[in-house]
Image: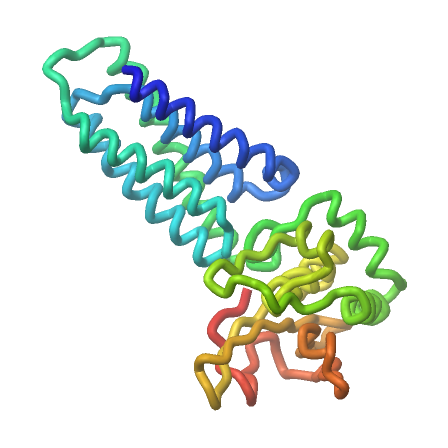
Length: 285
């Protein structure tokens, strides 16, 4: 019981810290909230010693599902929260595997565990639906790019002008004058945080493109983030944007224009999913 209590306290403390860090984002996007709830549920299930066979099988099934969901969320949407959720489920799985069933069965523990499993099943259902919705509507806040209400207040100051063209070009101008490329980034852990990018005014191509997309989307201007690799050298990967201005799509490479003597600017393209002559497009979000 002491080990289970310690594990519950540690997982709850970790989840509490994550909640504090993501507090603003939790009220904007359902996805972070869903994964955080799943992580809390793993902590609660850790406290219960599961003995009944059916409940143990369901718990194993749910923990594996949560782990897989967390990893996919972390990698597909580049959200570290997914790793926290996967870690919580892995700890729960390990605890249940190590402790094993007990010959004695307390009726109240069985009821509590059944309730927690039902809540977990419901949360997984909502998470699946929300995840699918985010993939179908990648331009929504909280899908591939997430920003807070505080960020949006700053965005309104940056995106000046009355027309879409004026707003987008004011964003482009502000970023090329105020953002610098981060040459000390860790390429193995490239997860964008819009608020951090705004505060530090530094980032790599992914961070910069996500910030540009977030500002445009906050002004109801469709803007995609594009991941691709060089047609000449596959090891060279890059991220840029495609923005929709007054019914026309444009390629925009803010990262390139931060320091290039010959700016890329705005290149007219047929559609947001048009092929690129220099890069093979891997993902549009």
